[in-house]
Length: 169
Image (cartoon, rainbow, N blue to C red):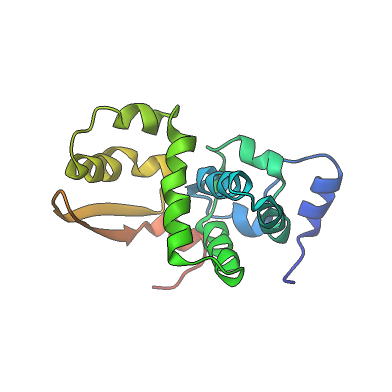
């Protein structure tokens, strides 16, 4: 169901596995890393059919996930979230998927950069101040409060994102 991006379809069958549909290429301030982690989680937990359906539904070729730094927009991440929700994913499933992303990040700059943290508060601070751009550049983030048991993060959408996606404020 949904709209078909015929350029994506032609690229897929023409052998260009790295093409991203136009809907997800405009305002691409996110990274493919999040989608790659979701696909890996589904594959490694025995839900490979759901993972393949998820990519096919959004006209994303698995080969495009080989570049986790590749740009996509936040709409792809949102659409995949909603797709998984409709497929029966619960809050617990999303938490488990997020926890599993540690595996995919162990040998990444994020993994190496987080090896020496000692407290949860250090994790929160480092993620917000040093590594948020590792995942996306849609927002400016600020830590409102941080302790070793909780963290409150506020954000402001970047004007470039809103403009490129034609969001009216």
